[in-house]
Image (cartoon, rainbow, N blue to C red; front, top):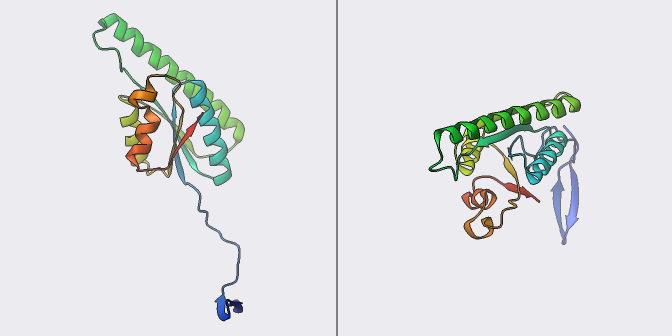
Length: 165
């Protein structure tokens, strides 16, 4: 057992515990990153990779195939949109696989889901017990009024949210 030390503070003596090497970490263990191919989501992914590398965190990249704003489109148009989403998901998966492979051994996964972006990010973060969610800042002017995915995630208050510009 390590020798105890005493320190005087404000006229009274207090026991001081020795400061040894701590094996644990206080950083995040699981991070969820929303990606959609925008410049800000690519920056969010890059930031998350750096954070995960330094903290030895698991990364969950999530691409949500969102069909918002497609009400009333023809079946052919809907099929074309779905095909585009599938192609994007495959490209994102390839890019992430290549990039993460260059970094060496690291715990990560890429998921693709269909639905509302906020709902699916929240569901995934809850499912994997995320310690943080990272997203790119919205570049659409209307989101300043109606609220972006990032704002909705922050308002949910269930995880720390990092919004990368």
